[in-house]
Amino acid sequence: MLETQHHASLEKVELLDLTGGGADELVIESDVGGGGGGSIGFRVFDLGHGRFEELLQAYSDVEYMDQEGYTQALDVARTMQSHGQRFCFSKTTRFEKGEWFNAPRVTHPCYERGHGVDAKETSERNKRLGPPGTR
Image (cartoon, rainbow, N blue to C red; front, side, top):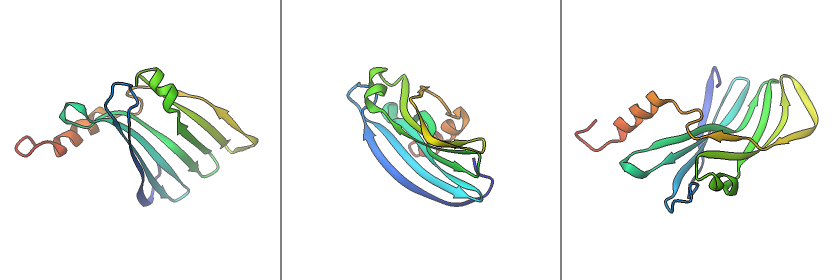
């Protein structure tokens, strides 16, 4: 998202059962920032089947110059209602396309399973994380 990255850090790691299947998914939020803005990436992984299967890649917080500024929080109850097929959020947008809102706009988007996931990146990560002799 950012052209020049100046910092990166891990913000939050949680295990949550988002599918209702009795097994936890790994939820990671990590911060990156640089010239003109910053964001917090939001990723969900299924840890079953002996690998990290990425289910979602989105942002929980974005502030990019005067173009975009929002936060969004995972709505666990709504996500569980879809059995992890959609990941639902409560999103508060402060500004977009250079326009600041007098009152922040609140929406409730849901992202389909697989949203933002790069299949090639996932495959390469699973190769790196695989058991010795399989990499």
